[in-house]
Structure formats: C-alpha cells, structure tokens
Length: 330
Image 1 (spheres, rainbow, N blue to C red):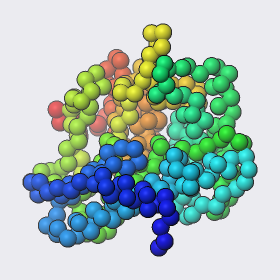
Image 2: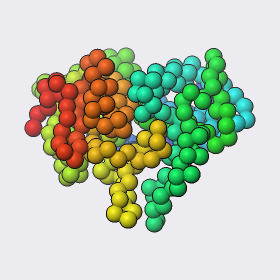
Image 3: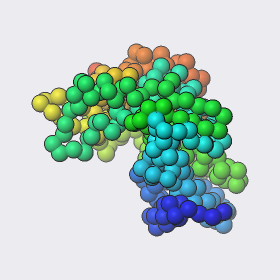
C-alpha cells in the first residue's frame, strides 16, 4: 500500500506521541490522535502479541484520522465538504456503512444527532476573545444549510447540494474508532482490553484479579473529581457535558453542545449525561443526544434502546434509568 503524504504525516505525528509501559500485569499504550488523548490497556501474557497489536492500533487510528477528519482537506470528509453545491463524491464501503448508521441514529434521536450541523459549528466560536453571540438571522441562515434529509446519497457516492453545507463526524467518529480498535484486538486473541479515546470507553474482559474494569464518573460541579465509578465488562461508557467548555456573555452562560434543531447551545439545565451501552458508537451518540433532549425526552429515548442505561445530571439532581446504579460503585 502506497501512503499519501497526509497519511504519512498523521502516522508520524501519532507514532511520535506514543508512550508504552507495563504495570501490574497491564500493558498501557497512550498517544494523541483525533485531537484527544487515547489509551489502550491490555492484560495478556503474550508480550509479542500485545506489541504487534499496539503497532497496529497506532497505524489504524492515524489512517482513520487522515480519512475522516474534517480538518484535513484531502480526507473523505474534507472532499465531500469541498464539493458542496458542486458535484458528487465517491465513497468507500466503510464510509457508506458509517453514513447509513448515522441516518438510523438521526431518525432514532429525532434530529438531536445530526452530522450535517457543521455550518452551526462554524458559526459558534468558543475560542473567540471576546466571545461573540451569532445573530438570529445568522443562526437561521446556518440552519438552512443543515438537515440530514438534505444529504443526497446513491450507492457509492454522496452529494451536499448547497454550497456551505458540511459533514462533521465529530459526534460519531471517535466512538466508532474505539469499537474498531477493541474488535481487532479481540480478533488477534486479546480478550482483556480497555479502549479509552477522550473518555469514550469500551471494555472487554477484565483486568488481573478484578471482576471488571473501573471507569470514573466526573463530578460536573468539581471537575477532576469523581462522584462515583462504574464497573464494566463487555460494555461501553460515554459521557457528554458542557461544564468544561462554555463562555458567559452579559451574565448568560453558553455551553459548547449545540442543538442542531435550533442552531443554539443547549439550555435545558443538563450538566452531564453518562450512557452505558453495548457499543461505544451507540453510547457516544446517545449521551450527546440525551443531553440535547433533556431528562424527560432523553430517558424516553434511552428506554427505546435494549441494554442501555443512563444517568442525567441536572441543576436539580440526578435522573437515571432503573438499572443504572447496578453498575455504580461509590
């Protein structure tokens, strides 16, 4: 396989960031990719198999970022967005499957999850100093460029019909990568694995001498401290919240999670949402969607999904599905 210049550059950056260590029966791989800290932890007696797996993880994740990052012009997402209003773009079978899944989740979440919301992300800039609130007319104009139903698809190709439209897989790509990395570890015979990409986590098996992998739940009122932990095996956990990324203008707080239906930051009292699900892709999409929908609609959504539990922390307290606390240890 001939690497493109972009692939080679991303591989070099990801590999240079990698750190490996062995501690208390666990092999740890830590690296930086997809704009976050990534961890892969394995329990195994086969040091060579783990080393080969770690090498494969670094290569696969780097190639995934090169293919799907909207910040890379030559990625498939970059090419689709650049062609908005101009022409169709051919896509490979994996991208087709990923977009098919996105469409299913858009329908399930009633539009709370929408990968076509890039025009809204461009409009709201949380890094601006001083922060600027977009006008109502600007929000309406951006909303005209969003909506999953506007994305045109045919076998092997997609088209964004209006200039300015754009796809962003930030709400699904990292979580999908977690699932893939865990699955091809299992295909290599490694059965005790935890994959954590920016606190989107999936675990299989268990660490040595313990019944499950332990995942801390951060307290939104005390960032850096946990209010509890979850013990999981063969499950995924994802948390969404706006308590770390927000700004305040004229006494009003604006969080970084946008409601793609309104074009504005969520303002429903939610602080954080944790979802436990069979896959990280599902957990990640649901955690953000539930945050957007709020406690009542959010819990109704979760209860439509088999084997999924959730905890919603609001200004008034915690709202959970019936079996969430079965996984929690304080």
